[in-house]
Image 1 (cartoon, rainbow, N blue to C red):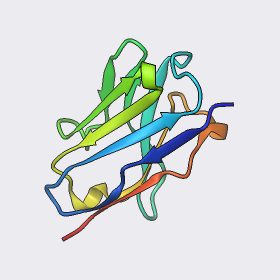
Image 2 (image 1 turned 135 degrees about the horizontal axis):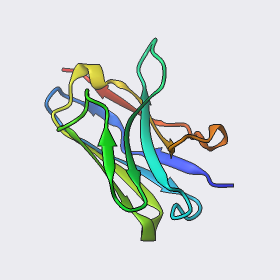
Image 3 (image 1 turned 180 degrees about the vertical axis):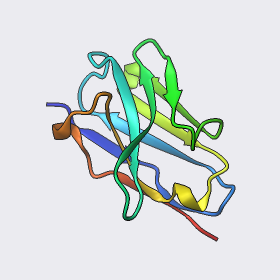
Length: 115
């Protein structure tokens, strides 16, 4: 059973940056793809970025050009570099496999973008 622990969230002003980390308790090499998801207040949880084992990435339109997903297989860690943050990026951010496993959800990390 793999456990995923997200960290790196916080309060940031619009236009600022944050780097999120997702540490896995086991090897992530066995997963074809890892993804970052987010759930904004009153909205459904959505996949915003994913990365395959080969390093190919995809992004939802709302974060394209601002967010970068990466992975360090040796450290069993997935990262999300978030730049040019906007108030609408405020959400709880989670990592999971893609497609997701419901038993892999962690507690997430809260990102609040506000002046």
